[in-house]
Image (tube, rainbow, N blue to C red):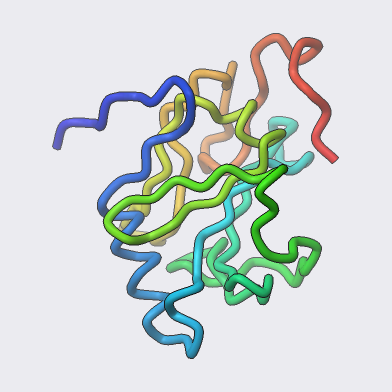
Length: 152
C-alpha cells in the first residue's frame, strides 16, 4: 500500500486507525462521543514515548494504548477535549485528538493501527520530528531538542 501524503500542519490518520477507533467505540455506551487521544510523554528508551488513550467526551478512559488497543496504564489525567489546547483530526467519522505540545513533536506524522504477528496497536509512523526511534517503535528522540517545547 502507498503511504498517505504527510500533513505538514498536522497528522494523517489512516483508514485502519479510523476503523479500529470506530470498532472499539462501538462496544461502549457512549460510542458517539469516543475519540483516540494521542500524546507524547517523557520516558521510554529514547527520551519520549507515544501514548494512546480511548476516551469519551466526559474524559472517561476506555483503553487504547497497548496491544490490540487496550489501555497500558491507569492515567486519568486528561478530561475531555479542550478547544484551546487540543487539535481534532477526523477520518471516516473517527476522531483523533492531540494536545498542541504533543502535536509539535509529531507534526507531519501518520497515526495508524498496525497489525503484526506479535501484536496489534496504534502507532505513530514517519515522524519527521524524530531523530531516532526505539526498535519497538513506541519511543523516540527529538531533532533539535532545545528548540522543542518541554513535555509535562
